[in-house]
Amino acid sequence: MRVRVPATSANLGPGFDTLGLALGLWDEVELSVGDGDRCTVEVEGEGAARVPRDERHLVLRAAHATFDRAGAPRVSLRLRCRNVIPHSRGLGSSAAAAVAGIVAARGLLSSTYPLDDDAVLDLAAGFDGHADNVAACLYGGLVVSWGHEGSWHAAHLTPHPALRPVVLIAERSSSTEATRGLLPDRVPHADAAFTAARAALLVHALTSEPELLLAATEDRLHQPYRRPAYPETAAVVDQLRTAGIAAVVSGAGPTVLALTLDGALPDGLDTTGFTVRTLAVDTEGARAEVV
Image (cartoon, rainbow, N blue to C red; front, side, top):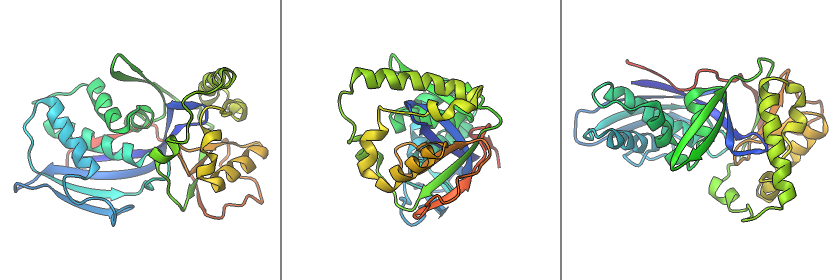
């Protein structure tokens, strides 16, 4: 099986652990049944020098979890990865790897050990701990995700066609675990109410009225507390928002996501330490084919 999976940006400001957007930057994996008793891994591109080359590789761990969930016996697997999504930058690289492994394994199992879409989303969310990135990676476009009684669910929405995301990819990486550790156990009621209102407005702005994106991306729930972890990122977000651009921290950072309507950034913006890329919204999500 060959699977292509998109990068994703989660949170989008106020939609903490809930909203996700798929972006036009893709990893590709090929997964097949191996000949021997051990799994083999080949990696090129992003992270090739750092990721495991054995069964600890996230794509293989996700594939094995899929076999287990389906009740199928494990077999040796051969994995080839062509990575483009930056690692540890807030663009959903781990979600993409988990989704790729699950979708590829599901294809190998085919109708012999069928898995429905709900099981696939549950499996993928189990690797991330929440469903915002993985749901966007699976379905493409914009997603709203939530958990209920131990299972994960997602609603797929179509973003407004005028949306032109720009990512400012930080040269330095960050740890999701570390930045999440900066969040307080409790927030003021006023901040929670403020952010809930903006999250609701953001869904409307992203799908119907993008002119409201600047107001809709205001957040008081997580971004203010994470600023000490990446001051350069916070400074770029501040500059963009002052210029009227709906900018947010992408996922747990340190990449910046600018939700523009024309792909343009203001003149004079200091992008030192960042690589700027204008990306399309990916509308297809994970795609698999037999090779």
